[in-house]
Length: 308
Length: 308
Image 1 (cartoon, each protein chain N blue to C red):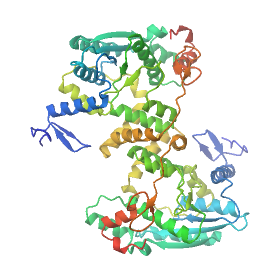
Image 2: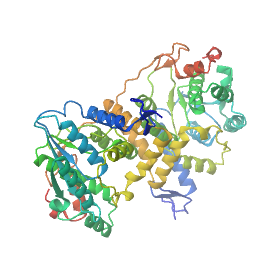
Image 3: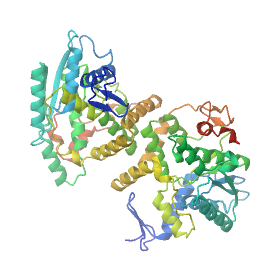
Image 4: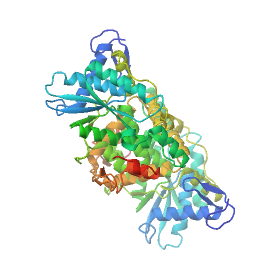
């Protein structure tokens, strides 16, 4: 088959669109889509973007593209933000990949640790939760605390935006999870930017790029990314949902796009008022009296260790 | 285990609630839930209800319960409405079950045929679609035409309501299908009663009862229902989605409830304007220029046979 653009031999067939691409046109296609997702409001002068970097393919592809987009923009700044959760035999490798990337691309970076904020690491928390018979999913805990820490350092670093490497698969999974749980408030939060000034505006440059295309892009660019999956990920509800969305995509190419686009259309008609108060314990923005992180720490009886 | 209500030996464990039931308390529980779904506005004097009857477990359980509820109500009328699509070796048995039921329960009934309205039957249409290489799913066609016919006879019979035997499984599947397709208008239609006077108000007495409980109820009552699945059902997108919702329910008891309840909460915040015009061909209510049924008949080149 031929590339639909330049007629060179095709190396990738995009099932949902029926299009064939050569390597170069594939890279251009992804680059264009991501630029369109970001829009003109973001790629501009004097902007500072914090990039959440895990060292995996998604975060490095995102960082590569952001670095390309901002090269010609004067006074724009990028900073890599790495969070070390403390997952033995896993996270250090990822962070090393991210540091090597930042050095190669000449991007400033900062590493922070769960330990800096809660005096303990994720491995210890998972053990503690088991001892206490708490039905806490490691990913749920890790997710909220990582988000809180990333937001905190993005504020400290005076970032205008916080870029997160979620791809189309991640987003379609999140949408489906909330549909299934019937969690309307989380659906609304997922889709709309918070107006609360305590949250740095999040951008998701890869939100329209399927995971397998991110992977192909990373390989074409010979990015040295961290390949091992998180040892806790197989325990997650998300991995169950990802099997469902993968199966749907296999049987109905474009299903992941249709889930996310349908959700975006839904948001246009959805008017859920944003309830943002302040956590009574840490003072951070929270829709409840006590924020999720403080609730978890309380259940684990390690609230006194919190530096939030 | 003991029944949670009367302490007799339990014969059913309701996984999602953790409750155990004896036969009698199970029957009471279902009856109460269905009565609550219907509410006081429906079970009242001088009302006429058309009951869509296929002869399967859902429609007969629904008809049994409606018959029980309306026994003490003066001047209320029930009428069984059967649609014969023309599916060889399948539908006749179902309709015979439904007729036997109506005779036993002393419920008036009426049988109408696809042939009465489009001069042909579903089997012929499926063959025709294949010959014409149309990618038409039998269930999609059958669904819209059956709905149209049921609505038509409910109007002719001056019914105030049209009762449909959809159970919790059916509804959770429909919600998921529309979430995945991203079909916001169909989601809105699914959840809200049409205000258009050309549509008889639909009620779904079993909407909060899971399929396996409907089955158990039918067996406890020794209802003689039609057991064979429709020969076309395995071809359907719906059967693919039902595998997904069944798997979710297995891993997370209550998942089907949470999908439907979440959808109901979503509807409270969802404001999709109802677009009801009139089909240019048949004059029935339609959100498009040409209604779904007329569109299908046109594609099949049998529009001239339509008596709609």
